[in-house]
Image (cartoon, rainbow, N blue to C red):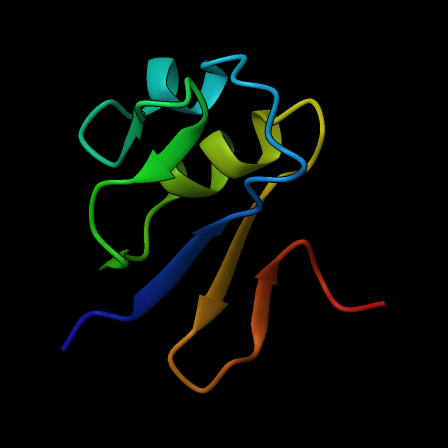
Length: 76
């Protein structure tokens, strides 16, 4: 079974740059408020999704394992 990541976008932090949408339009979309949101709450772990999270200029995207352990941003 493939590892799954939970995706969250901090709506208070997101500025709607769309970089995550451009990187992975099958995972993120711009919502009615022109802020990013995940299309699904969980996705299969993959480098493209991690790259999209890392591309956010304000670090609004977070990824976690099903256990709650952070994938991105990494725990201090």
